[in-house]
Length: 498
Image (cartoon, rainbow, N blue to C red; front, side, top):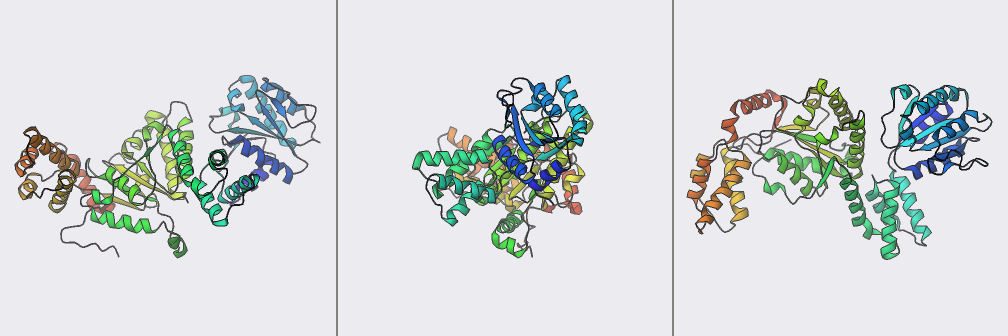
C-alpha cells in the first residue's frame, strides 16, 4: 500500500482535478504540499484564503480577496506552462453557491487536460452531489513518530538545546496521535515555563490529549479509581483480561501477537459491565474514553460520518487507551430505514476500523440485550471475545455482599447466610443497593448495621430477574448456544484458560 505522499503525488501526476484533503492542519498541509511541488517540478504551490486572497504567485498577490469566484477564474485562464497546485482554504463554505459549484464543475473537466490541481482543505464537509464524481478524497493522517521526532528535535535545536535520544524517543512516542499544532503548543508551554523541553513534559502531553477529548461532543474522558478488586465474581473474565493486558507489551509484539482489539460484554442491567470497563482502564493504567453513540448521529447529512472519523482519530490520539462504547445495542440497534441508513453507515465505519486498526485502542462495548444488535457486530474478528455476564451465583453474591459491607463498614464481620438465601436472582447493583438501604435503616436509629437490616432491605427490593424474567431467559438461552463465553466460573471450576 502506498504511503500518503506517494498517493498524493500519483493523484497530481494523474491530473485529478479536485482533491479534498480532510484535515484541519492547514500549516502542516501547506508545508507538505511545498515538498510535493519540489518533487514534481516544475509545479509550484499557490494558496488562497478569503481574507488575504492569492499567495505564492508573483504579480498576483492578494488576487481574489473576498472574491472566491475570482481565484477560480484566474486558474481557468492560467497558462499550462505554469503548472500550479492551488490550495484553497475554507473553500467548502462557498461550494453551496450555485455559481461556484458550476465553476468547479467546469474546471474539473478542463483541468484533466492541464497540469493544474485544486486542493480543498477542510476537516468536515458534505460535498454536493454535483461534485462527487470530480472530487477525490484523501485523509491527512496525524504525524507519525518519525515526523514527531524531527519536529521535536528541530524545536529543541532552535532553542540551543540537544535532546538525548532516549528522551526524544519517549516524547515522540507520547505525542503520537497529536496534531502538529498541538505538539507545538506543548513545546511552547514547556519553553515558557522552563526554557527547554524534556521528560517533564510527559504530563503536559497527556493534558493536551485530555484537552483534545474535552473539545469533543461525542467522547468523554472518564477518571476512574475502580479496580478488578471492586468486582465480585466474574473470575473467568478477569483471568482473560489479565491475558490480554500482557499482549500490549513489546515482548508480545516480538512473539508475533497482534494488539488486542476489544471485548463485548453482554448481560442484564446491574451485572457489572460498566464497572468492568472502568476497572480495565485503571488496572491497565490507561485513559478511559466513553463514547456516547447517540451523539454521533448529527442532524446534517454526512455530519454523522464526519463525527465518526473525528471520534476515531481522537481515540487513536489517546492510545494506548480504553474506548468504552456504553449500551451499544441502543446506538446501533435501530431501524436503518428510519434514519436514511445513517446508523448503518456509521456502524460500517466503526466496524471497519475495529477490524483493521493497528493502534493500541482497546474497545469495551456493553449491551443489555442482543436482540437488537446487528449480526455483523457479533462476527468473530470485531472483538477478541464476547462475554455473557449472568446474574451472580450464590458464591458470587456472598463475595459481592462482603465487598460492599467491607467498603462501608470495614470493621464489621456480619453473618450473611440468611441474607444470601433472600437475594437469589439479585444483580450486583441490586446487592449494593441492598447494603446501602440496610445502612439507612441502621443509621436512622443511630446504631450499628446488623444482619436483620440486610434481610429487611432485601425483602423490600424487587429484582429485575422478576420484572423482566422473559427477557433474561431469552438472553441466557442465546448465550448458552455457544455465542458467548460465561464471565463467571462454574461452581467448583478452577481458572484454566490453556
